[in-house]
Image (cartoon, rainbow, N blue to C red):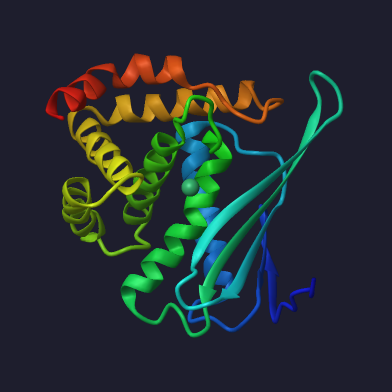
Length: 233
Ligand SMILES: [Zn+2]
């Protein structure tokens, strides 16, 4: 395995950012984005992970872009553990000059950060719900903090509707949930936030496990939404 050489490295209070190539965004810009999102999530969701997060901005093949978070847990005792977190965000060479590309890149960085609050791996195949809420909150946060154009959510809603009606799972499922969360936000933004906070509590309490069981949170918040969706099918 060849080691990656990073040409840009910069750090801030909660993050170390390394980039494999020069990007249209500066390292300081990504650190600023991440710190702002971190503060916003702490304000709304409670304390974040007590660790410095490594963020790797890597080069990939042209159709392979994506992001993932590696959370490595070391359990020392029933109460004590440390957690090391690394985000790996991959973009093709010369990516990010177009506005939509830049929006997506910012989305990737902030998206992985939100997973640090609510986790990602769940029991009972609820991963798509966690993925949908992560995508939804990330877009909302980017717009709220002014990192994306305000029409991002408008553009996205059209997309979700199209996807919900035309393509196949898992994209259909994720799009349907995003529409549901959008409706929840319209009806009662506090309720959507309370849902996220309860997911975060589940993840924190069950950190010693690989997967988080979120069934009772889903029952509490989504029951009516889920029933409605089933009836529509
Ligand atoms: Zn995700």
